[in-house]
Length: 148
Picture 1 (cartoon, rainbow, N blue to C red):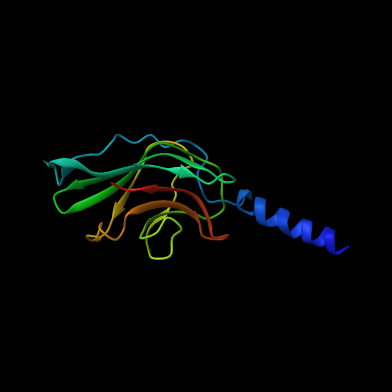
Picture 2 (cartoon, rainbow, N blue to C red; picture 1 turned 135 degrees about the vertical axis):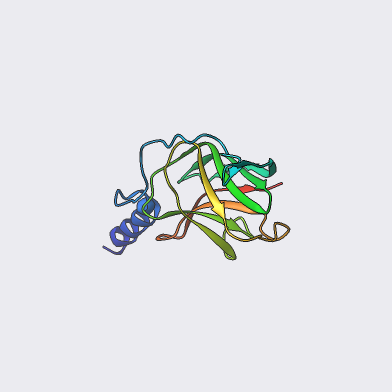
């Protein structure tokens, strides 16, 4: 009986983040890459950092993370992005690949497609070297990118 309970608990932990009670949109988002105007005035937008997402073997997020700088503003973009479904997926800037010290950029907008996230303030990118797709509810990393 103990073996059955143990196996059931392991099964719940392994597939826990695949529950369908997600608030993540399953439809792809199509956004024009990087609107470079502020208040109608054209600004210079430059690619500041980037990295390819390394997926978790059991839950996955794939694509390229790009940090753009426009004036004093930063934006994180997920390009060619696709991820498995999860109930509470967030986009983080983190100091570690497995996030402990984070800046939460908000809920993942969609499990597919190009999407952008405003970065408030001016993070110390010498410390915040990772972008992470993370399931808060089950504390599972779906994928992370080392930003360079």
